[in-house]
Length: 450
Picture 1 (cartoon, rainbow, N blue to C red):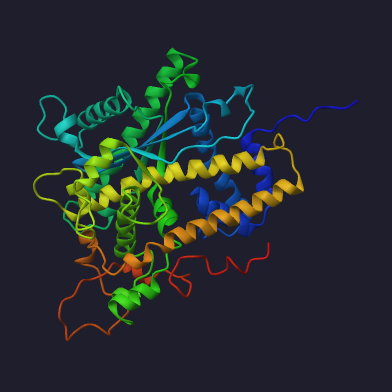
Picture 2 (cartoon, rainbow, N blue to C red; picture 1 turned 120 degrees about the vertical axis):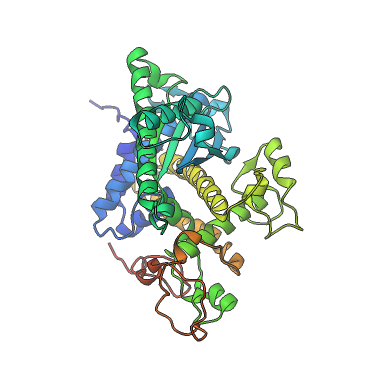
């Protein structure tokens, strides 16, 4: 008697091929999916991180199948403000998502991420509790304000998000030397936890009230997004040593910066967002990562032209009036990249899911070869894209929050007889593992045999 092979779930199929793959291959897959892999020794731990991360992406993939599109909203909370970005991807073929009994009959293909929203808003101006002058640490103030924020996020009439990513930790205030830095850190952490729990509890209430909510358009998924993983995804394979030596002189403070230095990370991300936007506007020849709606294209073209390259700020592009701070642009860049990261990770997961489930999730040597080849291809593609940011690192962005009181790196070549220069973060002193060109590839990644 012959028995039909039962289809494995997407996660089980992925886990099976991860077990068969080498540690080196799983490192490459972790890079492409945005899961934690740096400083992890055991293959089983890398695999567990991949699977845990992909369980979120699988929920997002199912929402995409259900609605033929998915909208991801990313949020960075501050003391008095919050930044937000919103992206959408769509199924390219409405007929390729026939879903019967969890069996996807055809492989999914999706559009490039479409930018829907990108903004910085004032918490107190929009969500201040009644009869209060500011949001304090009092439980009533914080609970009422965050509840109003959750209502704002979940009751939008157009382009309501299916996935909310709340970015943390927020290093800006942790590195601050301001007298009220402890209160700022505490308040931001409370905001993050309250927003996550409020969104989660609202969803739980919907599930109790309507048991089928999980399959309805009203269901959404709130998650905590590790900002360090976002930075690693966009920056860790960027070659920096040659361009820093050329731009600032070999042996200078700038040329000795390591990739985890906030100054260098900030500069890479700022230049990267400019590069992505300019590519979407067809000003830059880089690989286009984002599609702009007509409204956003008109809005950005007003400020970004070939004459303003290198001088425009994100605050200007979004129409902010009054005093502009460099941290505004940094926060806008961070939330933009966080939203785009989840879109990139979801697209990668969809592609890898298409591979591992191509034979109903059952193992074949041919599929394992495809799996391995895809992981190497994605890592190389990410590395090639990040190389395009290096030529822009002829200038570095300021990072006021930490360099005023931070010590110099271990370098005495440019003290200029005690003249005060820009000081760099102590984080620059402990980073290791750079290759000869300055990218943060793990030094053993090409030597590993298992």
